[in-house]
Length: 191
Image (cartoon, rainbow, N blue to C red):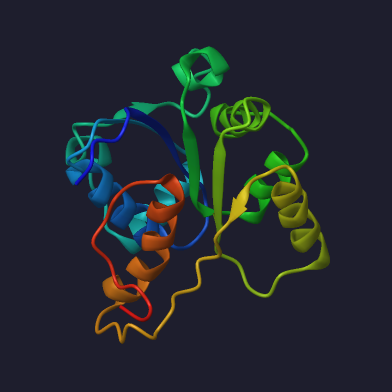
């Protein structure tokens, strides 16, 4: 594997179903052999859904390499562009968070971090987990895409013939990892 520059990644866990996507991404990043820093912020509902879907646990203890920040901590380094975080992933993302990001409403650390990522012209990935999508949802997602954000819906692919829920969810997480520019061993079409 070639040497990659140090990457600083913000992981935001918003209040939508789909905690498995966040967990799988966190597992990958925690075990990643490259030089990365990961800052994590989660919403109250993000924690509620994690507890329901993954189980009640101390997430901070599970991922000791990460730094966790309170959702109202505007002193977190990535609340400023000078901290030079290179990418942000909101996974899973509720439509409420997407709406606030799309409209520049920096009401908490999660939305402030997204605002910073946009103003610094860095990588923002949102992973919406909602169905059906209303016209308002589509407009907010379009706004994020027009601003340079990457929308990766939490929609698994099946051509790799996943055998478990984790394998199916990993098809989405692998796309996130690709867009973060991190090396991985994953199924590739035609290979």
